[in-house]
Image (cartoon, rainbow, N blue to C red; front, side):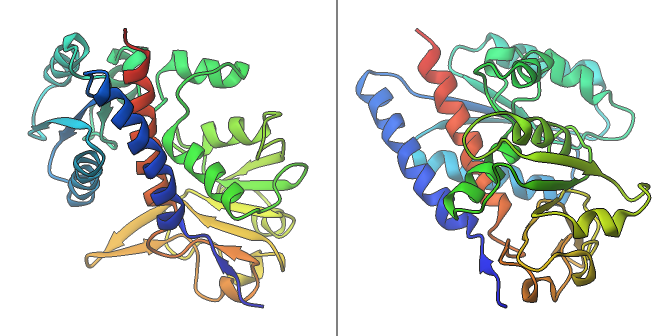
Length: 284
């Protein structure tokens, strides 16, 4: 068995074309969507991600604003930048690149963003809408994963999905999203971490595995049921190389699998662009 590649770059390209059409319609009405990003510190991976997001903005015709703050700034200084972006009518979406330096309260920083400018979908008000199944900006990586699976016709509805990781940006909101009675979701969802007993056995029962642990090679072939779909949403770096949570050899058992590069990452960015334009469209 050789797994079909879950080609995030290709699917993201199609979504970005649709987003570009929406941008063009805004331009014809004399309006321009704007995204503000905040990077705190000098994490090379975070800097790379922010640069890619701004490149996406340039390609789509979204104006971008960026604040790169020293890793020694106070939380109050970060919040002051957010306040300034909240008040700027040219900025429709605000993204604080995570993780923040140790010692900062991530939740308080995210709370500072106005819900209508929260294009990452992580403000408690927007997460609450997700819990209730109400319309609102969906967290970018979870939404991107659902779109990726649907684009490749991976069966999810009524299937058993196991998510590794319970983080704020992926694991928790993805579990909520996949359990909802909506297209491409409506699954039986189990959330696990490495402290769970029978970790391997639970994974072997999954029709779909999504690993968002950031632990290289965590998901090994013996943990995967033949024919499952396997999504690597957790990444880490070593010697400048991007590493996946999915070990080599899993592709020989799975029916679908994300590549090491070009899987979930492009989808996350495409969802961010879409959320930014949707936020701009709501402003009258």
